Length: 258
Image (cartoon, rainbow, N blue to C red; front, side, top):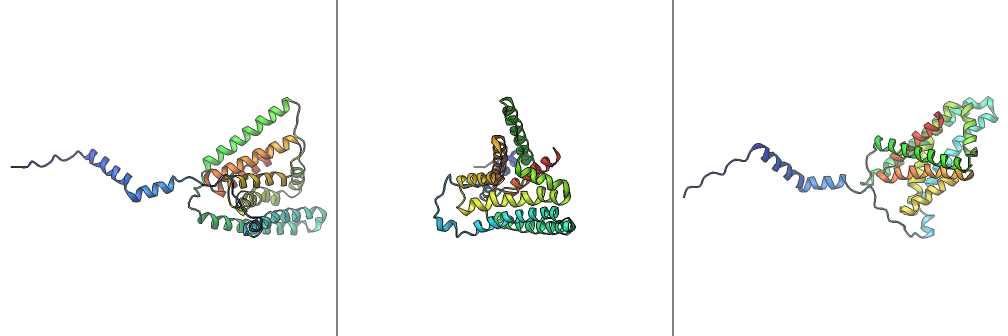
């Protein structure tokens, strides 16, 4: 019996079959799964012993980085009391700021390299989050104004604005670069991990963030709650601290412009 050779499949059909083979090959699937993996898998809550909480290095790193910001601001403010040393104090604040930012970035990079679920930074997502935060702030301000509630002057922002007028360069650097980098490391990374990362620990750390900024009045608390929620969402969406830092930087820059 004679066997007729099978008809050769059209080129387009062969290309489609090769694409399917690649699509479902084990190596390709593994790469695809890693790329599309959930950004994080934090539990809702996590139990931890109090003694373990006070033993974790993340707690003391968070305290150290947070107080470093206060030292920088205090150094700048000392220029008001000692104007003859204002230049040297501003230079010292700049050096301290660069040092703290460098240490913060090294800490963030080291932690993110250890977690394969950290997703890459996306500017489009950052801009979307900032836009939603602005709309939320405008909406709540409008609603409060309708019922006769106005935004009182915030003590924290007032003191920063007074320093900004006298020492604009060092204050802009502190508010737009040092503060966002360090605060996001502290409140969206180190403190939540000090108790073992969980959604509850992230929320509690953000509440601490709000309280330490000393908001005044219901509008003050609402405004800082919107900020904290935006920063936290940015952090958790990609499991990437740099997303939250970018949102924080843009927001602080807008507060200087508006």
